[in-house]
Length: 557
Image 1 (cartoon, helix red, strand yellow):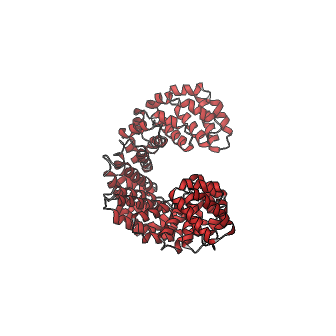
Image 2: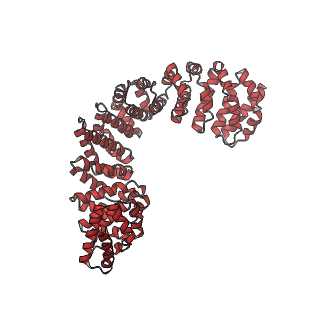
Image 3: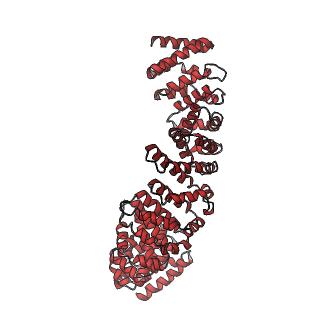
């Protein structure tokens, strides 16, 4: 290491007067020392103050530029050397060198920048602001035959694409075209994997999704799926998963999704359909997720239901009832839920037997599956007949009441409450109300009336008003013990309650007067004071209902 100290001293002198020959020799010695013991040599370099001189040596004309960049790349492998490199002002001259024509300079410069900025979002953001993205994309296009340079560009893209600020810059280049071109040429799994690692974060951006679709990425992905579907080799299974996941990601953009749907005639859409009956779980999952993504607008949903997609999804779910794959169950139920949104699809899906298939998963203990199951049923029961049939299903109602208490899973709890309320609101059936009373569901509807979401409060109040109008006797005790009257008083007195909440609370008060015990509670709480104030409410419906309620309260007392 003594001659390292000599080399560093000599380098200081030669760097100052730029004697090319002896400079090259010193740089070679440094590279040799770094190869033998990187950490110790780096510490010596830092201590010598030589880094500050490197900024002047990084010029496009100098013959030693590639070696200097190589030394920076090597020392910056050590975390403790990165900030000193930045403080020595090396970033700006390195970025300038990315415009060089010399492939060795480009390679070492890319390595140096990559190592100095490794794991530092702030430094990477600085590079983005300095315009390295368009420069690197251009380099990839020019030097696509140079494997080392291509790899350097891909590593850089992979790091920069993680930053949100990079996406807009990438979108304004032809990165999609270049990556797809490169992808088509790759045969080796490792090389393709590198490109996948860049594509995945880039494809989170909607503009880039569309560019990738237009550049023909989807066709490449479908080809991989076809090649790998029957293989059990670990690499092939991994590549199949990556390709099909990326395919689903591309469908998350509205424009890219619509372009691939092509009115339901698109070859991509047809290929994805064929994944659903496949025996490969990964493909079943990707197929169901893709259908859920295609089902994001009414036109697509109607077309798919008319063309038999529901039966395919039901068959898939049937294959996963016993010890099924939870992710496949979740994805297929998501697709059914989305397909059930357009009004015209509901009756068709009911007559196809969707509710029967969905109910097979009532015993699932997996919250994501429970959540989608509830959402699908809620979408389907707008029709009175369906709501009545489901609402009289004691097994379903008991499970809903149980899930209404799933405090660890707010989504499941919320959807269960909303479905209970919907069964009453859409069926308007005494039998349904009786089933819900017998299963202990009343208290949950009363709690739902205090939800922080106005839409849920409203749904609860309307359902409770129907209970009070149609079947007050059997529900009376449960309504009292859930303190409904006190809750209604609070909702009416609270200035923050929405107009529709005040309106429906008063409708409910009037309906409760049919019960002697509940009416006594109403009298005890001096509702007249609260209601008479609402006669001057700015909302006409609230004011009118207040007058009616006041009359009822006055007459009854």
